[in-house]
Length: 184
Image 1 (cartoon, rainbow, N blue to C red):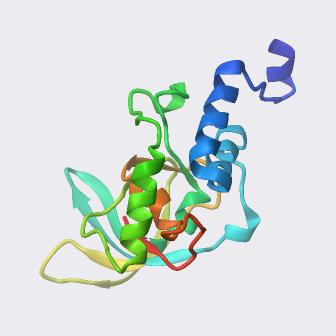
Image 2 (cartoon, rainbow, N blue to C red):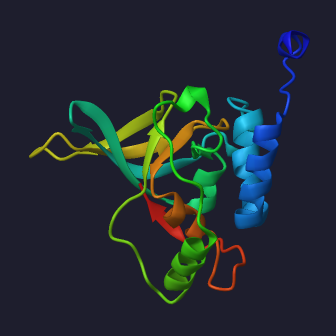
């Protein structure tokens, strides 16, 4: 193990293998996002460099927060959900239960019929993000501009809304959909 660590080789342990097998049963090909996030954490994705979304920046509980809308697949390329079955120590103490395939299918069906969720998915950026301010609402502390999405794996941790996020990439028939957008 020491030699593998020295050579920057990630050893897949039995617990991790079971986790990825289980999540692949539920998510199919979408499980690759969890896999690359775990094993290629922090690696830059050149194809996603300089991608931005229109956003508003504001203070929430003394911290900087952003509100934006983005295609679910754009977020998934950067996202990670710390499931309690994986027990990723870098995500402690936050974790979520394993994904429920019935719930994802129900959400996908709801969205494919024109449904939408008024509430947002909550993510936490684990690296500083670039925000180019465009305009300002003089009546408040809200700023509008371009939020540049991270170009590295495992930089957006899904805190709340994993089922809505994964449900958004599938249509009602369980096929990938590239048309659904999510608010964060």
